[in-house]
Image: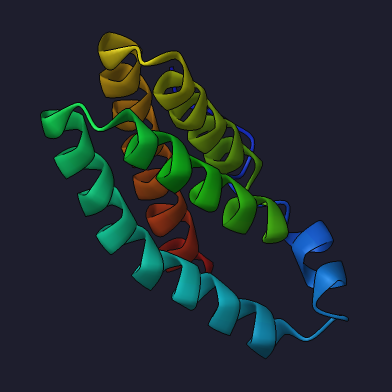
Amino acid sequence: MTKKIPPIDFDSALERTGGDKDFLYELIDMYMEDFIPKYDVLTKALKEENFTAIQETGHYLKGSAANLSLSFLKDSALQVELAGEDKDIKKAQQTLDELKKEFDRLKTYISNMD
């Protein structure tokens, strides 16, 4: 099922930047650049069953997504964090897959905004 709600609450995110669209786009770009290495950390941690790294990286991504009003990414990152906390490898894999889907959805959405 495809989500109809945009992956970013643009009005809320814009409010957080004082209405500065250029700054918001810069922050979104930084988030997207930062996401890939963090996702790589997560996939490596998953293979090594490093639950501390899964939990900490999920927590980091949750916070940065929340700051940009990326609610679906925030929720997915929370689930990754909780999987790490619960030391649940199956849940970690499932939540990591969902996190990647939400990131890809954001990329598509942002590229179509231009």
